[in-house]
Length: 147
Image 1 (tube, helix red, strand yellow):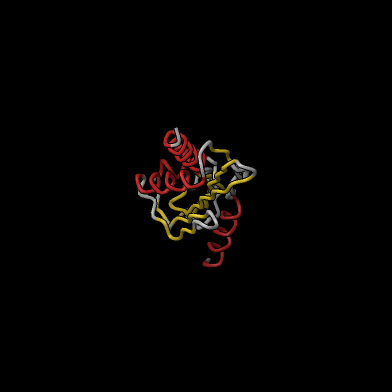
Image 2 (image 1 turned 120 degrees about the horizontal axis):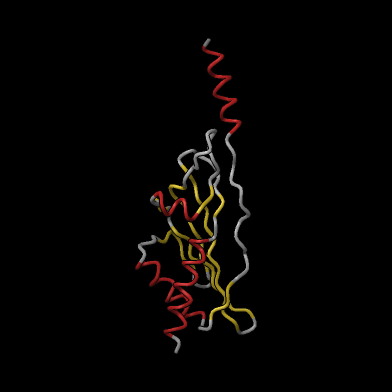
């Protein structure tokens, strides 16, 4: 009987589905501000949003966040973690992000990439919402400061 339960549980787990969306674009976003102003604006935005920074290296243009926990509303809005056997969504409970800034032919460009995880220990795919929000906040601040 014990083995029957194990087989049943394995069969049920096989019915769960993974994320059903494509990852967001990796294209860098242009910003009408200097690299230095964008860098400064990014640090300010991260501080206001209490995003902890694990690593920053201005020379390479990379800022890597520390792990951050997210509430269920943000987790649902920011990532697709798939569904369980009855169709209930797994929700992202935390993640990390990288922010990159570079200059290419006189144009400053930025990109945020995020990786999310759920309590079900499933890989989640970012919906791109978090990235878009953070890129917009940094871009708007940097461009306003450059005027």
